[in-house]
Image (cartoon, rainbow, N blue to C red; front, side, top):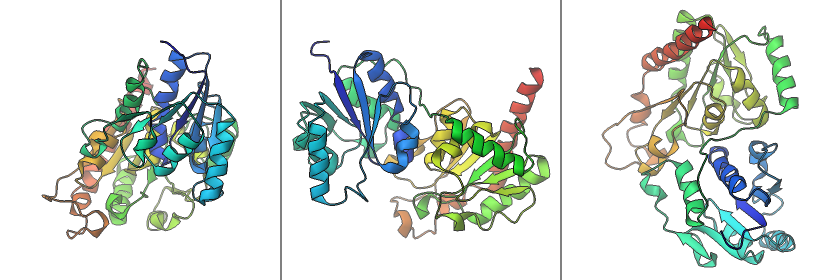
Length: 351
């Protein structure tokens, strides 16, 4: 490969799950360019996904809703990058700001999607993600393929931090769960109403699991979303960790869990990266939001997705009151959950 890049900037400033699914980009760039300096530009709240990644040299924070919200701060930020003399910008999610910043930073090779001020790119791919014909992880790797970078590893990565491990261990001990004791984690949140399984269904699921297993259930939510688990925490055997954990600490919790059950959301991809058994519940009929594109990856990852007969998805304005989600019944989720738990029990018994 001629003109090997010495400094590479990966850019992705959207959500948690998106960044996790982009971690194979870091791995494959490092394999191709072992001596390059590789940086990743992200939002503040996704930095925990990237810090301590062994293949990454640096995390650069771009706070588009805070410090860098106005155009003047963004231009100043771009010119600070210009001084760094990056050779490549690998832009995994198309935004006007990402394209403008990489252009103003005078990065010679700017690769990304043909969308949102894409005329500022030097190499662009036709944007067809909305068709949902393959997984988001494969879409991110398509940028590398366009740059002739070999794809040798598609494993996602989530770092485990020592300080997070210590905090989670102590929190669990306070709840009577010593190191090595398994439990179930439930995450009843999602970024949109059209992705949220009914709270009553989650409540019924916990009841069914309590009847069939002795494992306690831990409820988690992001800070500020505690109301989504309010109906769940008064049941027997439930531990309330709503709003108490950072993203790193969620990883440390999920690493110890027997099973994670969640709406379609970022933590699903944390669990899958850590080889924890996952059940994810999907709504929506849009191809671009389907399990084909967003399902958790891994041999212990499963999902439910039902067709409500819609010809068009109206998202949060659903005229059928989210029938696709309501058609996923607690009984079938509980049945799958118990199969996964029993499978682990048998495996551990053999060892």
